[in-house]
Amino acid sequence: MEKELLISKWLNNDLNDQELEAFKAIEDYDDLVKLSNGVQAFKAEDYNTSEELERALKTIQKTKKKPTHWFKPAMQVAAILAICFSLYYYTTTLDTTITTDVAQKTTIELPDASTVSLNAKSYLAYNEKSWSHERDVELDGEAFFKVAKGSTFKVKTKTGTVTVFGTQFNVKQRNHYFEVICYEGIVGVTYNSQLTTLKAGDSFLIIDGKLIAKEKENRTTPSWLNNVSQFESLPYKEVLAEFERQYDVTFNVQNIDTNQLFTGSFAHNNFNLALKAITLPLHVTYSKTNHTITLKRD
Image (cartoon, rainbow, N blue to C red; front, side, top):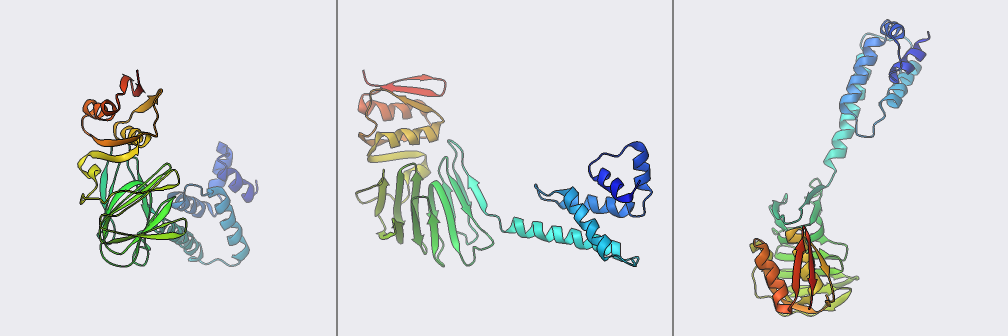
């Protein structure tokens, strides 16, 4: 049987016992096995070992006239080093991503010693390799930033971009909700290609595409860092959405206007007390079945 046919059937794991013995007898057997093992050890998830091995063999056959004792090992080493280099380049250019689940919070330190605290159900991504010349992060959810002084620091969201140099601020990017609160320093918010500058205590709030005016912020940090969600004249639907993120429940709302404004707060560590805190002020009754809470007015 021709060598090429044996190699092809070996690549497809289709050799019978007799063919396997014939395959082991060919002069390139040891080299083929070593090359295959090397490729298997370093291949990426979608790497096609058979195709790449056949391509390597064809290249060897075309270029090999009078092989020397060092040629085959050199080709193997070169192939493995090329694969290793490709994988190293790929993995080092990947973004670092952090996600939080329902009722989960976390704090991370960025490469420049800036810190980010992520609220529940949030996503943050940044590239460590390019951080020295581009301090950019992507955010989906809510996060409080303490930014070390240095080059421009950008927080990119689906709705707008926040630009700072060294300061403390909170960004909340949720469905149809975008809010930035500056606690220290100066923050630039770009929304619809228009820049708004915030100083300590200033806020920028967009709900359903509308700019909402807010009073001066007196707190030095967002309340959620202390496991409390606080609301001042915000639509009731935003209160319910935050409650769902903190307690892993779903609301079924009946005959209630969820656009009515709510002022109040709820704690993240006492479910029953928290539920009363968001229902009693509006004279809303509730019932709970598993993870679903039904709200209604009598």
